[in-house]
Each structure stands twice: as C-alpha cells, then as structure tokens.
Length: 107
Image (cartoon, rainbow, N blue to C red; front, side, top):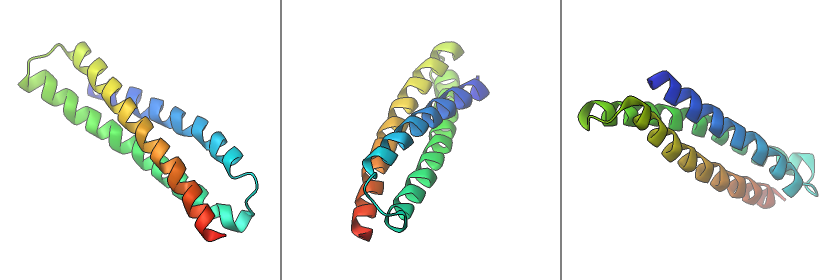
C-alpha cells in the first residue's frame, strides 16, 4: 500500500503541476524571456519537490494509520492520498504566485 500511496499522490501532484504550468505560461505572457526564466525555474523545482515530498509524507502517514491506528490499508491509502493531493495542490498554487512575483521583481 505504501507504493500505491506514493504513486497516487506523486502522480496526481505532478499532473496538477503540469496543468498549472500552462496557466503560469499564460500569466507570464508579456514577460521577456530573461525576466520569466527565474520564475519558471522556481516553479518547476518547487513542483517537482512538492510531488516527491507529499508522496513521501503520504507513505509515512499511511504507515502510521495502518500500524498505530489499526485502520484498513485501503482506507488509509485513500485518506493519505486525498490529504496530500490537497496539500500538494495548495503548495503548487503558492509556487504559482511566487513564480509570478519573482518574475515581476526581475523586471
């Protein structure tokens, strides 16, 4: 169940990051390449780290729920995946605004 939790969470967060990347490109439409590059790099690194970190945290939480709280493994996987997909989505939204602010500061 740990592998399933990691894959579900990491792939969902990577998908959210991928969709938000195109929204970021639209938001930075008027920026010069030299101004937008640091913001894009910040967003890409943050998105990848967010996907991996939320996946690992999902593994830790599913282990805690299954062993310590005696919860069914499938239910623990569903709960952990849902929680960390939401956390990852919020993290990606924060990185979206941070990337735009960084690009604006580079102007």
